[in-house]
Image 1 (spheres, rainbow, N blue to C red):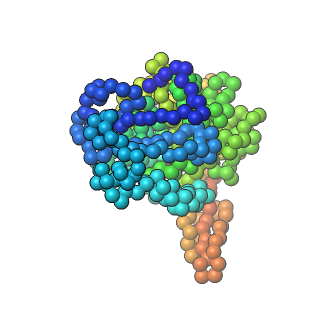
Image 2: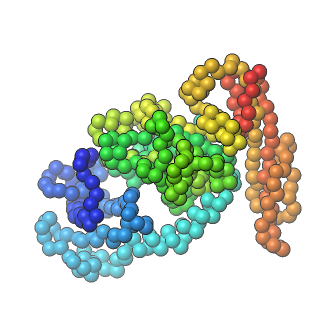
Image 3: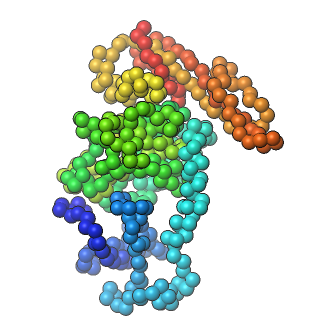
Length: 412
């Protein structure tokens, strides 16, 4: 619920009651979350998620993980004060503190894997087919969202059931093709404490566990243009443009655009909105259509819906936001007197898998740009980076082939 005048005060404490109740209007009181039933059907367990979005320090804000007590019977009955008492009462002897296990898995397994995935964002991935042009959808269901870029997801796994979202939370999700040097995204952000309580932009690794959060930038860390829009340029560090803000690493100041790391070879970005004001009609929470219908979602959100397109680093340096494969609605904005016909110069590139033996020739029509080597002696391996440059025919609206990068546009 969006409540005006509510702000954080250091030292605040909260007590939340979680009650299994089919009729959610049955029990009065404050800070009550209802569980035990989904659409009137009894469930065996409830999942409680404790999120920290704006920590004052470190990963957890310097506060302890919430303590959970079990209540037997009526609301005001005996409350166990120790874990041993709770286990005895509810026959849960031997229960583990799950959050300790989660942190251990993250720090010893997922964190090292995340670094490896981020260091090689350009390697091809079988089955990964992000849409082009880029679509933003509501990504509150994991398998439905993943199906937008991995079409091998079985149909029976795709539903509208939420994964991690709730009545106050929604996520815009967009998959990018990291074979493109830059992905540019531009949108009008909602106003904090007037339209939403919080918004942020994150990059996830969808193939590391079930969504590994690689990097996030909050609303007060992202640079806003003079016209009230946020522009984010995603890329690998190798192709990072000069003079951009790096909000994830605290680099702000005299810069116009924001930069975020692709994070993996299958980059997924989320734009998160929390607790919307009823007056914010374009809010994700107020959208009642198909979560995967990008056109309907764009019509609902208007200028708050992100516009994304691909570009090369060299072309961005020359043309700024005028570069790359522009969405159709941006062409008339940026080129109001667009020429009738033009010809494109395009670049196609690929990287092979690691293999034994010497470097091999590229596919027909491609030239070898780089031969990478790793390992020593019997463990030495090679892979090739190949590319080709070609021109399109002279057309009214020419396009490069799928996943290829436009590097020049000429009137013809």
